[in-house]
Image 1 (cartoon, rainbow, N blue to C red):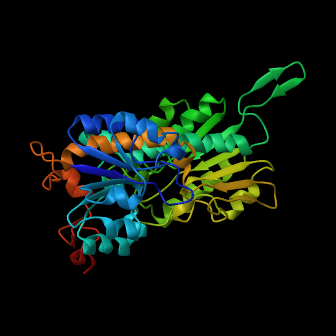
Image 2 (cartoon, rainbow, N blue to C red):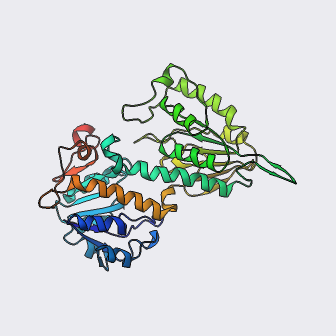
Image 3 (cartoon, rainbow, N blue to C red):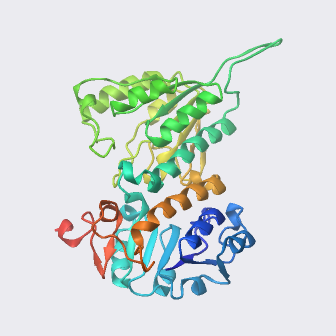
Length: 381
């Protein structure tokens, strides 16, 4: 199989879909890897390192895509990249299908097998392929680092001859992968950490990291998790009770990090304008969910908002790209783990295991048709 890796086009995208380490393993498995020159530069992976690992370096994306059986990307392919692929080729990337439904139809029209890495099922067998988790983990870490940079005080308690510096109070809203890593990182930096989530299982996870759990724990709370492990949308009544508890708590916090997302839906509002107004001058809010509308209505994509009462609100749309080497390394390993399910064991040709539950869960298109149940025409009907 001929596998292509090209430069990411988005201005804010510093990641790459392969590393010298994964290229070496892909080549050892019997495949050819063709990489556009400079594809790994922003991730600190130079062409020379890829070439040494066994990749062929070509000058343009078009040269890389010519006769490719599989395109591995971070972001969804651009129109010209898609057009350069042969009919029947595969594409594996973070496709953002909910935000680009027309693009899904375009993949079908082009006749490619498009696989959305964010749709890899969260099952035990697929943990090594779970790109959402690998990238969210680093996003949670980076969110705390960004908060520390914006916060005008120290995180840990420090006792000096001149006096004592109090520890920062950090509140993490949403205890999924990103939230748990944010909790762990804030704890490492010495903050007093509290956290909330609507999923009952999160309480024990939060406590295991040394943070205090904040939530209205009624009967609805006990049923607030899907079979796949995602948070359910809560009733207006529960949201009101939780908002009252959170409003009282937020007024005492120095750092608030929001991470709550529901797949395919706008991010829920967790921090209202009134809550922001109650916070102390110098406080910081990091809104990880800003790309889906944000958990705070005052946050703006990739802008630090200074409110009238001195609170800084930062919404970062691509936190993993602020750690390009590590993010690329983890994402490339996710793709490497998925590769056997896209390959014929004997011929090494591109041949997805269509009956496998992982491929069924992640594949958007096949043979000119949209096959994912969420986007297929019959689902719309």
